[in-house]
Image 1: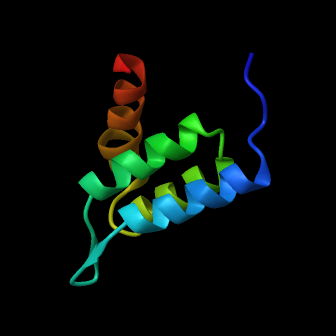
Image 2: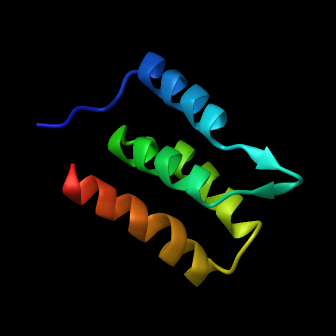
Length: 80
């Protein structure tokens, strides 16, 4: 049975997401978005997942963000 994460868990996840989302010459690298998105999903952190998805949307179209961030993250969850 899954329980809702505590505030300390949410804070930890948000810090880790910020650490993993690196900005390189003004552009977000897609590989750096997959892991933080997956971590946010696993922690049931809707706000964190949305932040990462918004980072992806700043660089690409919604369908590209789904194909290049959401799908790989879900595949990683499925293989874990």
